[in-house]
Image (cartoon, rainbow, N blue to C red):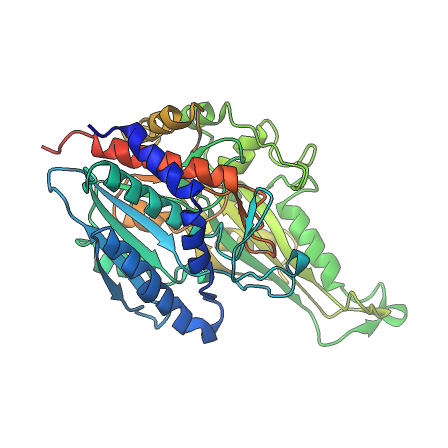
Length: 461
């Protein structure tokens, strides 16, 4: 009789034989840069030439869905075994950021995998081809161990526009709501808490970009002739920003802050340590909201960051008072923040407190979302990972960054469990993107264990 250990042994053998890395190398070879309009054929080919045959081998039925806005296509894969068994929906994205050819260490080619020590380099290895490849390989191992059966029903949606903000993912999922109907959402993206610790996160922080513009006059004016009688837009802008966030990153405006952290979230983060590796930046001393741990600041609180500032010519500064100054800020926020009110509130605050000349506008808003911390699926997933690895996984209420989780948690009404297979130092979105061999092998066993356990779940009434 097949056992959970058999499924884990099969996926481990798949990794150790080198077959997994061969599959990943083929996928990395597709230059699926969604920001590059010339790569539309590669986005489609990745789905048609690679993923559709791979899903067909697993007995999934697949079809492509065209983007309503003319962007990259979507792939839906569906495997139905028994209507009385649970159904899981899984997500991934086949697009990647710019390959940055010529910027990688030792002249590495981003469009092929290269193993150096414990690292496997290549664009998409961490984000996200490696991650959905792990989940597909784990499904195959469970199916083989169960003699051709999974023990549950499974659906995938793979998009090719995540790196440009998933512009029509919500519309596609809404249009195919019945086809994507499931009991649970399990997917993989983003990093673990650390390379050493398996992680679950239940959602993501949202983000609002806030543009501050001070446009007083065209061109610059000689600082000797006009200094002291002309307002300086850069000085005004710096002061306006300082009225919103202080020199230690602490937000001053209440509308920018979230509700108090719940006891349930505090308890989940109590054993979570944010500990950078040697390759990562050291944490700042005495930065951010007072009275919170580093984990609470990162995963349970909001932060207002200055992303960019500009005034005059920093490369060739003239002895002149500039006429304009501009800044882009970003509010990263958790569930419960009154984010729809932020732009108007910031504008009103600045205009009523000595900065009527600062123009305030907002762009690129994305939602925060989180599975209910009381969902029984959380303990189920954590117990499964503990059984496989012998480690207690970190359970984060949400990812520090952003993903289209709200499409699934709110749009489709599913409990969402994210099991990331990368780590914070993976260099995603930069040259030298990579995954770690030990983390990848452990991730394969984690997912085989999770999928095996899903097949052991009680039948639906």
